[in-house]
View 1 (cartoon, rainbow, N blue to C red):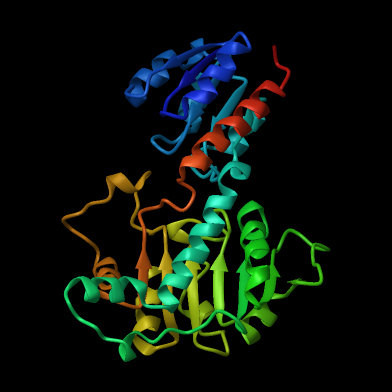
View 2 (cartoon, rainbow, N blue to C red):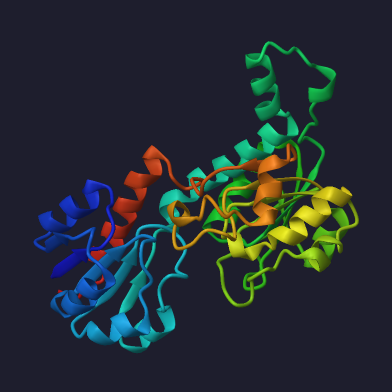
Length: 313
């Protein structure tokens, strides 16, 4: 097969595919027009987040057999249309689920213990102990929405922290164990101290976390979002941070990201984003939860295995 790499990836992916006898063209800097003009020459394409694979592109891909995304989310691929044309759509959430789970937990522990603020103060010669007194995760109830690779990985790591783990997934059932409680949203609203979101971005999950959703919780809560930025309404989050209904937030993703975080407008920042930056109740990172040294290689291995198992050649 002839395979086009539109985005850079761990070299292991290309090496594995070439070792299996396939031709790989690395054209990371092609424009949309160049991709459209040449995509008919390829049997497969490998992407990350740089472009959206739209109906227009798919219609020009006369010989395309697969689209592979080096990552978890598939929102930048018109999956339904591609599959209607017989094109397989692949992704690799198995490759970065561990990284995402560790990052989510790390952000929460840092927020609970005021580590960002305390570190900055000590570097400035300030020794402020009482204001930086933390809270413990043990004894809390953590609600997880979405029990795919990421939600499952976080639940597994939480088992050792002495927390109650409630999990809701609209599309799964019978997954509960003695330590992971299959729950309704209502139970999470009633009991959770912490909410961690692990859903794809779809029409159904766009702004899932909004003012109404937040205020259905009985307790003041902490929110973690390592899924997709537009699953959470930032303006509503700021409103509830100010009121105290949200005690703190850990955000690896922002609704203001374009296709990738690097394209965010750093000059004309939206007011809610400015409020996030100014708040010491918020932990922020630039969409790197799944972006570890290890996950880069794992994703390459997962995708290579899935591509080679298609048996299209």
